[in-house]
Image 1 (cartoon, rainbow, N blue to C red):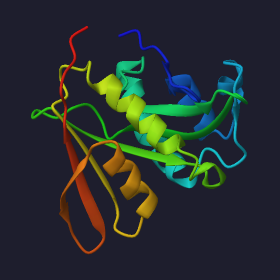
Image 2 (spheres, rainbow, N blue to C red):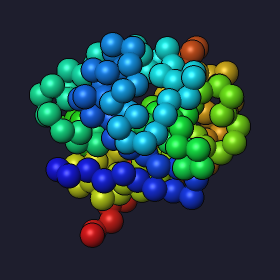
Image 3 (cartoon, rainbow, N blue to C red):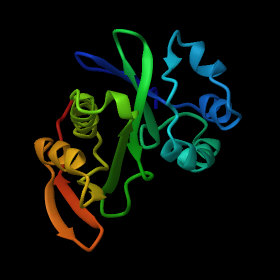
Image 4 (spheres, one colour):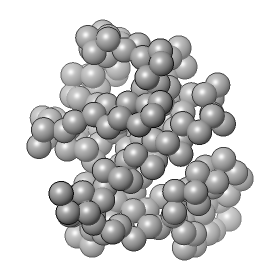
Length: 174
């Protein structure tokens, strides 16, 4: 699959590659700078660093991004990575994927989370293998709750710690 960047009004979502993943794991942004973009001083976040080995393992197998790994969220205006959005792997046998996203703290509250989630959900409409989009967030994470609700996900369950969300994917034919 030849994956294209996703453009919104203010953002570019760029699929993370194996080379970028390896570079970030080694503490370098050299591979990213080849694209003419820079990392925000607070990115990659601790959460992103935690999942990079998982992304790396996935990309070791596929060699090229499938779209079901992680996408860097780049602010168009200053060509700076301000966060990432991605999936906990490819769709399962029921066609379910789980999406997660995070922004550097000083870029939150500006609508970038919703804009990136909305863009990735539009991309998912063209993925025949995806029937249900899932997400989860901490009960006390009001901003993520607002973003998920605004994007059309419905709360389906909660426990003492987390709220679980789902969205039934309506496929769009090319």
